[in-house]
Length: 280
Length: 322
Ligand SMILES: [Mg+2]
Image (cartoon, rainbow over the protein chains, first blue to last red):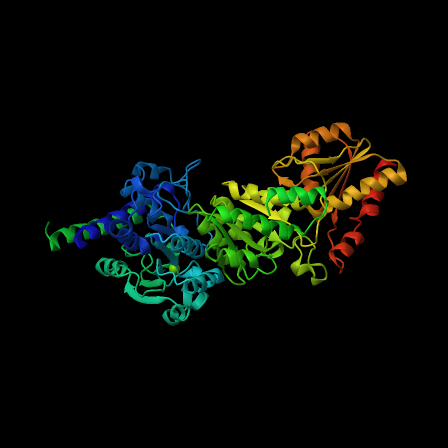
């Protein structure tokens, strides 16, 4: 896909995330909007995962450690044909399989996540198995910044480096906010890049909303032979909706009717702008 | 070891630690199956897995002293179809990494075999940090894990062979002292208690390393009190053999459970809960480690202190009969 086409996708995904959160009257809005550009590139450009090959042993694996941003994942998987998008109307409804965190009951989802600090160790295990089998698949995992306070992440990083897992790609959705407030007030993370390097990762920092940059970086993995690749993606929580951007209250939050209409208009305007700037 | 060797040893009643029986069985399986993977947390020595590591270095993953990582990584490996045994002292495996067990193994349906070594009070005087008196209770409260406590080498071997085959999460715990064979009967089936000795006046339902003293207690009751007591090895704590429990409750007026676990939330409470809800009333006693700071001592001394012994169990049976 061209970058312009991908940009359309991102805007469309954002609208859908808000649509289904509004319908469900629940959801992790800010985090889904901060990671959606990354998921867009992963599923449309990088992962060799489609509904027809989801049981293939050599499929790439995507494990979403920051499970609460599941609305982003649900929307992308529907777009990739794993299930009809209309099923998302049941999000968080009584007896729906579409719960508020990733679950293997949904086609396309690899692992049940949601408790923070679990996805990386799972990914390390899958990557170790890949090395044992000399398999061609790669393992991608998306971490949130708040969950880096979980010590289990650092245990897993040690193992990733010890076992030289260059088939593992760790992406940090670094929006710098968590439920209580800025990371730096809740639990200081910086200096982050040197920490990851000290734990044996090959680190790159990117703008997590620059689609071309995300794509290029993910195409470059592994950054170094024998090391896990770690991408610090600088993002904006609530990205794409002016009043949600960098606002703690939108960690989880459902827009009221007026807010919803404003958000949709903002996203629609961007779609129109995109069409004007680069004519089809 | 091969099954034939196990049976031969059993016929001679020579037992080795269940821990070694586990390691031997795993090596036997790994010779024929390179999908058998062992994950350890600096626990290969205490898990008697050094020979396994030497013979099958590519089938062993070391994670260092990091039990959360142990279980998370084991779950990831298991998700690819391998037969994973995550081996760590029971005390850490079922407490430090409890959330990984709950989410990454049980809830995510990753069929890890969780092997809790040096379980119960096997670590003796090393104290409460190293005891696992909570593991049955903790795991009984988590959906989707079979819980096994083999009594002797034969039950251990059968439990490990089952674990290697099944596609569901399993927890198996055992200690490190040599265990005599409790029965020459060859019947072992997951989810079916083994009636080791028939009786008429009372039945002792034991599990794991408390089965042997229960057998001794039954013999003592016979010789000293003329009381006929049956003994069951309830190696599967979940799923509980409710058919056997019903049958036992119909036949025996007195029932004792014995476990190397706190009296809260283990085998005894599982049995009591079933029987009461079915309206089956027997004189009933749960023996185990009481809800208090555990006394200092070896495994045997702790057992004796709390009456998990030939005479202690027999005395409790007599109290219920009288
Ligand atoms: Mg954040």
